[in-house]
Image (cartoon, rainbow, N blue to C red; front, side):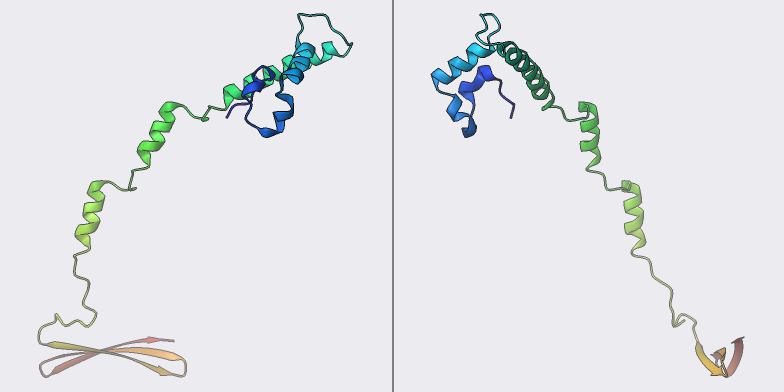
Length: 147
């Protein structure tokens, strides 16, 4: 919405200006603002000057209200970027392909014919990890002590 000048008062839609819209009042104000006629009062010249300055301000404000602050090229670049996923199609495909991978077997059930037992023991604040591997009748043990 643009700001209206006094000359466009008849088209003003804000109700607070209704008392100035009748013909007699508009004519009186218009006479005071008219710098091509004789001034009836000493203050008329000041009113005419202020009216012109206000009109300049209104022109400036109305001209700048349609600005976006960025160029059309910049706006297009922003719009184009809004559809980005953040990764390329190739990267998305690689991630999808990786989701089908089999994770490690924490129970080591893939060691055919062998079993692994792991236990933790504690003695006076020292911990020992005990690994026992059995293959057939043979059992091997390894210990790691942490103190």
